Amino acid sequence: MSTATLTRDLIVTQARALKLPGLARAFEPLARQARDAHWPHEDYLHEVLTAEHTSRHESVMRQRLHEAKFPEVKTLDTFDFAAADGVNATQIHTLARGEWITAPANLILAGPIGTGKTHLAIALGVEATKQKRRVLFVRAADLVRQLLEARDTRELGRLQRRLRTCELLIVDELGFVPFDRPGGELLFNLISERYERRATVVTTNLAFAEWVTVFAGDEKLTTALLDRLAHHATVITTKGKSYRMRKRRGTE
Ligand code: ADP
Ligand code: MG
Image 1 (spheres, rainbow, N blue to C red):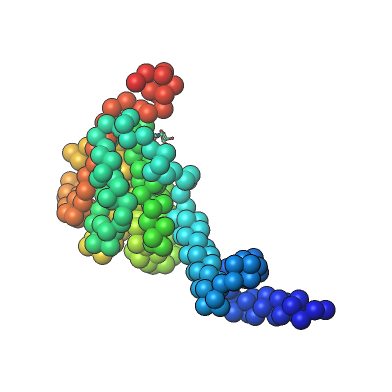
Image 2: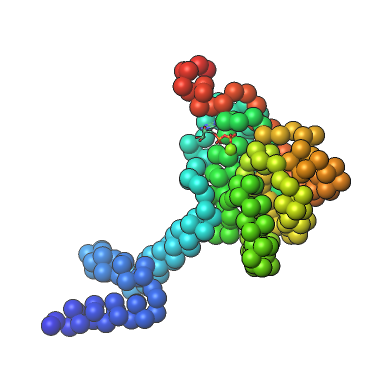
C-alpha cells in the first residue's frame, strides 16, 4: 500500500471518528485541485473546512424540514403573486426573512378556500427551517385531537412542552372542524402559553367574527384567544376564487 493511500484511509477514519462527513467527502477532490492549482496550504484547509461547514448546515436544514412535518413542500418561488389577490409580494418576502419569528409575532392568513393560505404558510415555514428554526406544521383539527388524546393517555405535559417550545407553530385550517369545549380550551391554553414567547401562524377560512363558531359558541374564550393571537400579528386576507379552479378553467 502506498503512503498516499495509507494517509487517505487514516483521514477517512479520523473524519469518521470526529464526525466530519463533509470533510471526508471533500478532502480528496479538493487536494487534487489544490495540487493542480498550487494553492497555499491555508487555502486548501479553508476550502475543506468550508465544505464541512456547508455540509453541516445542510444537514441541520434537512433535519428541521423533516421535523416540521409539512404535508408537502411548497416554496415561495412557485407562488404566483400576480394571481394572489390580497397578497403583497414585498410583505411576504419581508416575512420570509423571519425577524417576526424572533420578535416573536404572529401571522394570520384568512380567506376563502384555495387562495394560497396553506401554500404561503408552508413556504414561510420552509424559509424558517433554512434559518435553522424549529418549525411544526399541524392542522387545527389534528392538533386538538392530539391534545385530547394526550390528555387521555396522561401524555399531555410532554406534548404541551413540545408545542410550547417549537419556534414556529403553523396551525392550518382553523374553522374547518369545530371543537368541543375541552378541545377548544386545550387550544386556547396552547395559544396563551405561546403568547409573546413564540411565533404562531394560523390559517383560516373564517372571518374573526365567525371564530366563535369553532369554539362551541364560547364568546369569552374566543375573544381571549383572538386578543392574544392578534395582539402582535400580521393579518393577511387572501381574496378571490380558488387558484386551482381558475387554472382548470383557464380563466385569468
Ligand atoms: P388554501 O389553503 O387557501 O385553501 P392552498 O394554499 O392549499 O389554498 O392552495 C390550493 C392549491 O393551489 C395548492 O396546490 C397551492 O399550491 C395552489 N395555489 C394557490 N394559490 C397559488 C398561487 N398564488 N400561486 C401558485 N399556486 C397557488
Ligand atoms: Mg389550506
